[in-house]
Length: 186
Image (cartoon, rainbow, N blue to C red; front, top):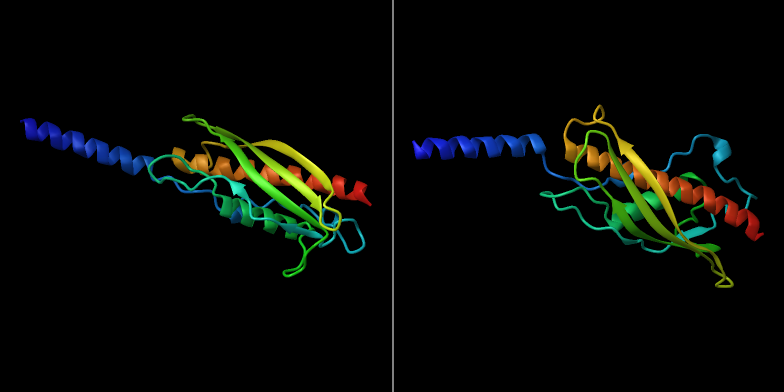
């Protein structure tokens, strides 16, 4: 009888683990800030066109599959570079660029549970003019992203989607800010 109870308990735990799933980290391809139209891209002759290089990103952390979804520095870095490239800011490979961007993922404020999950992110960005070492921008940017229950039934999947949404929004806010900073630098 005691063995039967233990086997039922073990089956219940196994079923809960299958329903819960394993956590996976944010995917860089899903964190790329969208370019809504050609007007959102920097064009040749405009401030910042293919002028930005990116230092390796810092912060973030790898995901423990048994815990919560996270965003690693490598995934954040890839998303930042792809976003800058899509917006026309990223310098071609091998070019020193005119400005250098450094980013540090300071925080992902994540809920432990919920139906619709909202994650808040804070990233510290620094933009330095390469030729003069003049700091053009040195500030944190905050953003949030939400994943709804209708997007993913499994909570760990929703959390990953919310992480990706907040990083995407954060990078988008940075690009908007960078556009203004570089327009004012000339």
